[in-house]
Length: 221
Image 1 (tube, rainbow, N blue to C red):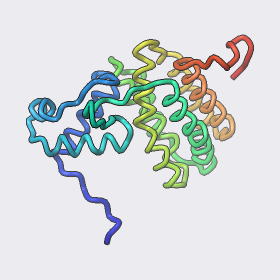
Image 2: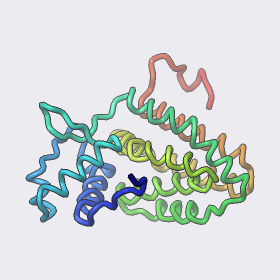
Image 3: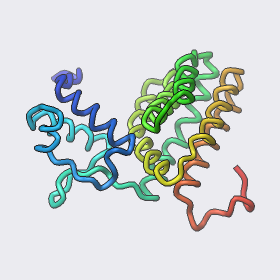
Image 4: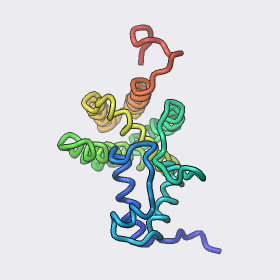
């Protein structure tokens, strides 16, 4: 046996990337059915690459396979959002702290922030924001930590897409991104990690408020 992963055929990868892009930019909405024959016709491929792409998307948590409903885009509720963001809160600030402490280059994060600021639509902005966050945690020096965060990355983006559809709060988040990057570039590892923690926590609180949490004037970030 070998541990080398089997490469995804190019047609499957093409369909996978296309469907994922449409889900993460809100063009395919939670609960929407994904029919193999329709997708195959749409992308000009047989049903096999579509089936394999949907299987991969199910593995990353973006779609759900049901015996009765078939394949649908995963629904986003408060419990799902909090679970995903809880993992991010536990891991992502620490990954950034380590990246700053080891003097890792943050040029990729800076470039992603520039692309997000220049974005002309939600899809571009969403993809650039994903790259910004990944560029902060990936150079942490621990490949396993990076892979763990990669595993929840798609689900976090799905939560963001749903939240933005009802409350487009990206201007506030862009300002927070600039502050995080500024602290990181200044070499303030703890300050950058704290700002990132507040950024992630405040987003999920705004998008999916809990009845048990204090009102904004009662608590603090």
